[in-house]
Image (tube, rainbow, N blue to C red; front, side):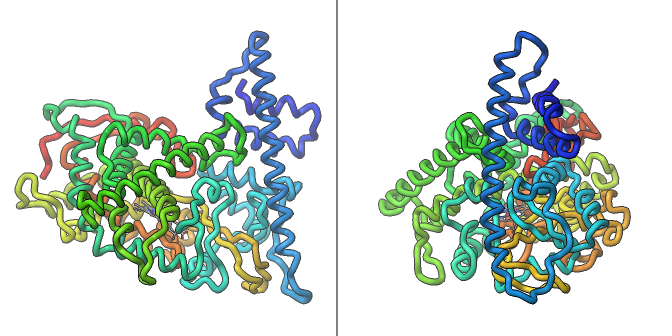
Length: 545
Ligand code: HEM
């Protein structure tokens, strides 16, 4: 019996069936977050009783703190919403759920998110209330907009009506007063600074060589094998190594294997916190994540000081990486970024650039293997584009731009496995929308549900890159938004595109591959995560181009 089943049974005797489902989902959620403590514990019989008591205490304490946090959030937000004037239009239909102050829909939403069932979650609500409905998630009164028009509102360029918003647990984990925390003009200036100096389309081509070298280094142990040799690789780990080492090198010139591994260890602890119950209690994943973040922030602070010294002594170049650029280039208002914001931004870059790319690449390789015609088309494209290149000659911007089919494969992958299944914004002011009032302070949520909607995509579950011969896969504008949109749209999209295509190029060149588990379950542990790490059997081929 797992801890969640035990917990559900423990409460069954004292609670009615109505709340049992909620309790079960809660206990599953807690089990997931406390997995190091709990999921390894199998309660088998008499011998385990003291362990059982400890686990019960931890689970009950955590749940009390979790509910307390939800309750406080709810009180704070309904206070804001209560300030609406008389005669205002009604709120959208919907329900704040069973016991709204105790979390309402939070657990069904999280459950749907983790199990990749967001479309079903939204469909059930839409069938009941229509495409605009209210609910309560994470103690926040939330309005879900299930339509391209809703997405358009949320991804609007200016911030008159809505602004960026992150759930409190994410804020707590990332918050160092940087890009993710700012809104308005300060956010625009900083974004512009980062984009024009590090992530813009005119800058990213400078990293192609590093990307190609890193991709080659990651697969090198197997490219040396004899043609026809076979081996099994833990794909997700390999891809995480690639993307993490790449951003370490490009952001802080960190290449030393041991140092990268140490940072990676802390980074993994930190990123586990993103799906953890936000209970800051010794022993919880969330607490470990916060501590890991502080250690990383400390290390980044030291790197900044060290680099400043090296720049002064002429031992580092002004453009060698993101860190140097930020320390030597003022933004459009003439300011050099403050250290505490730079620390935050370095952490944010590690987070946004590494697992996102790895997760997308994993799904690209998975779908390519499941769809042999896609593999053939990719081979054809890469062979034709690199025909005539000398051995060791690097890919150019022109080559990458010509890899249109490969980019369609990535786009279709991001349609089926979007990086986020839900994105929040916050209403900045009371406003009216399609006959309803959206009160200031309410959260607005767009989900990935339209990406699987047959209204917009024929056979939505079929992997078909040819959809993207048309803009947006042929769906109406504002249906497809893999990199978000408006003033917070992902500034790393060109970087991501290049690093994914370059890896695919190297992989295609040397291997054929099949999935060890063709139907491996994909969960969303924040990002798409294959249950077994996507093991793949590689067959070494003669270099294909
Ligand atoms: C396949 C890879 C990636 C996907 C699908 C992706 C997607 C996203 C999405 C959906 C957002 C939120 C946008 C919004 O709120 O509207 C975002 C934000 C962000 N991404 Fe990416 N991303 C990827 C890779 C990267 C990379 C490689 C970098 C940096 C090198 C990066 C840097 C950022 C940053 C800094 C933000 C915060 C922007 C802000 O708040 O203004 N991302 N990304």
